[in-house]
Image (tube, rainbow, N blue to C red; front, side, top):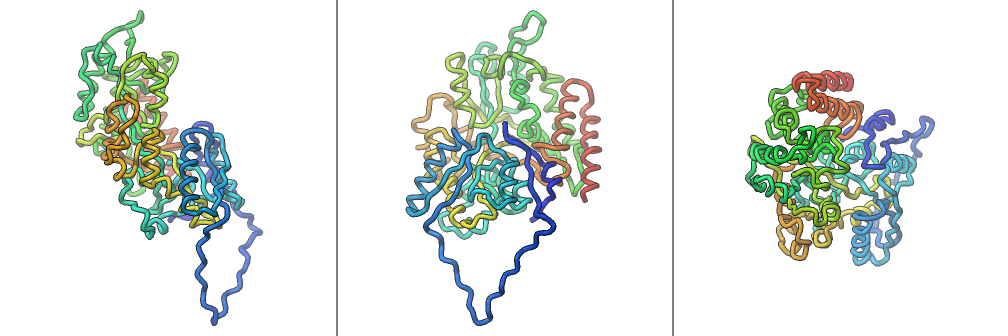
Length: 461
């Protein structure tokens, strides 16, 4: 496990989800020293602590769906096992990582707290979260092998499990069936390659032009949704082309395969003209507005898509097209629950957090569209799909996407940032934008990432 990071380093890893604030941590004062404890007498045998089966544990969670409703089921399950344990919910509006870090540093953090994949590494490095693996590995009720590896990996750092995720939220392709039909294009299938996608999306962008000669309907809604600069959108192209971005402590964005992958990704704008241009405003997210044929995002947005689209057009979902390596490469994201490393009730905190990935709760969440099952035993049980809304019909795509899902690279030093924030995030976003806008070649833009990140890596050896 890496050593704790400094306050300055932790601030450089600042990341947010929506309104969440920057990460921060307060180091203990230099004048404070750990209190000495009296060693047990040689004649005294250590006593095994009795398990705590009553009392109160605190859970800091987000208010509203999907997080708060899930807690109601977790509390019911917890009290069924521990009737004398009271779970006290404390609410946070949007997930404030700075507050969480400060509470942990002050020793006042709740026993359990809401987390997300982007916080796993900084919380683990600064000992905010508890490693759940030792308890999970010896728990006869817990089968870590039943959890899709890609999702468990989002909560794992340095071999330790610091968050249990809530749902199988791999990026999936939402598509407008009405537009595909109107353009005479083929409907997406699970055998599509990206070449197939481009061929058919071109039929949609060329179908109708506005008064300025620009497509009235775009093939891919990436600009208005901000997806274009999300690691889950661009990094699969690097992996799918056999590229690498970090090797033996060196920045390798200039690797020929990485260049090929990013070139193919950005050619959706620069060559094929199927992706919505950056800065193009259609009055909202283009897919929901009926102005784009494809939208790529996690299963968790399906309810919102259904509500927003209503009866404007017909739509469904499909796995992402295949990359040159023959895989449906895709990224993901997830909210989850962690236990506080300084909790006085670590065992009870673990017992609560593990409920999130229990087959019984995963089945409830799946049936109520609170999530897509991330445990294989539930995912392979067709009963979770029995009474779901008619749209989307191909919910199996949400499960199939897990087979080829990839994880973000999380091995960068804190001072260099990450895929989510800081210097690295800025460098990648700047490079992608300069390529898409035709302001720099792929080779030059990626070399700039290597120059900037490489200097930081060298400094932080």
